[in-house]
Structure formats: structure tokens, C-alpha cells
Length: 96
Image 1 (cartoon, rainbow, N blue to C red):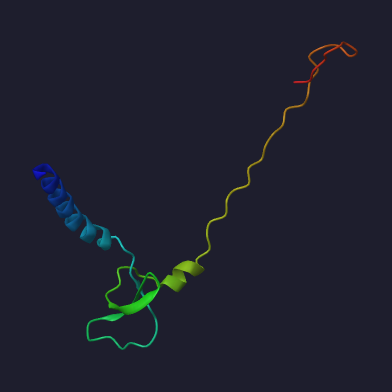
Image 2: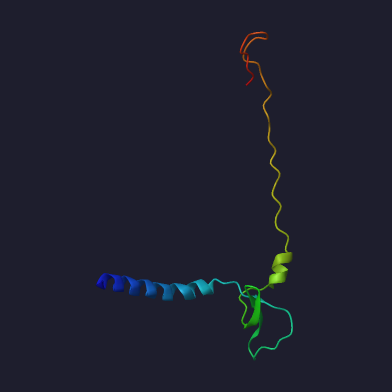
């Protein structure tokens, strides 16, 4: 029973450390619109929700979505010419 409590406590501490680290990687985009935020903050979008804060990206989410994606290069397949592996008229003649 004691080991279960210790493992639970260790897991809880690990999650408390991991959650802020994951939040730091979130992309926070500036939102270009009316600014009703307190001084020092500006409108931002997080997961599509507009709120007040400080962005960590230089472009807005709408500008990022308008950027064209790179096109995939066309792959050209070269087929080998079929050759006969046996004489014409022979039974079981196959082409490779």
C-alpha cells in the first residue's frame, strides 16, 4: 500500500513539472482586431479562442493558413521493356 502512494506522488510531481513545459511549446498567434485588452497585452488566439496575452509567433493564424504548402514532386516510373525468356511457340513461355 505504501509503494502505491509513493508511485502516485511521484507521478503527480512528474505531471506538475511536465504540464508547464508542454504549455511553453504552444503556438500563440496575434489576432488583428479591436484591442480591448489591458495595457501591455494584445489580442491573441489559442486553439481558435481569442483572448488577451503576449504572442510567441510573428504571423497571425490566418496568415499562416494562407501560406501555400510546397507541392510534391511528380515521380516518374520507368518501365522495363518486356523480353521473351523462351522461344515463340513453346509451351509455358513467360515474359519478364
